[in-house]
Length: 349
Image (spheres, rainbow, N blue to C red):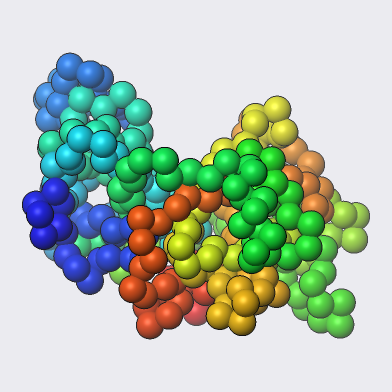
């Protein structure tokens, strides 16, 4: 930011390993999701007839579920050689089933910014279950900058796990750290325990900037422990579930949730993928018993699908930080999900 590689950003939007991107003043309702291609800018594609309506965000606007929007962001990048960018929805964005992807001029892939990129940033926003209210300055996605050999291979991840257990006993390491879904009771003495939530359709509007304002039961139906050991995911329904593993991201590392092989099932568990240094971490030797469970945003595809307790549903890849952050996740920051079990987004009481 000081060098000019990132313009239009605010220091108070910095996280330990990412930058919250913010809405600018303009958005467009568009006919369909699109990528500009290697030869065209976003503006050129909008003037092709893809834009249906320009929207002024200064006073706020409703983004209706089932529609696709493109939002001009306040931030502008000028990346030096060897530096690349990656983007992901924020945790709170994924947990209200809003699909957000970063778009750049001349872009051929969502959420990827090539080295040397010099240009504006845009967010494609598509609410799937709930309509949302957003305005200039709202933030739904995050940016990470990466350089060099940053990703740990399985051998390096095994060594890190031996020093600071990353997921309790028996971490499943294979092309990253495997995550399994929890559908059984954590506390057998709690008859009212909730192990998941299923979104209610036709619920009210969600203001993305209001914290703790909503009753979760107006938007979600609680799911109790499954005696059968499985649940059946209904097509195109949205679920909030949790991992069995209590995760630890040590201070010198960050992580990202990545899609697993489609051969493992007809469902998606990949909305908000960034995990910051210090997530689930405790200074007591980094003991994973102090970890935080990953919250999983789950959507089935075209057919009903059986999801079983303990089934592998996602993977985390770990990445080296250039240096240890001055402040870790959950330490002096407004970290809504540190120490979490199953938890809805910050918008809910």
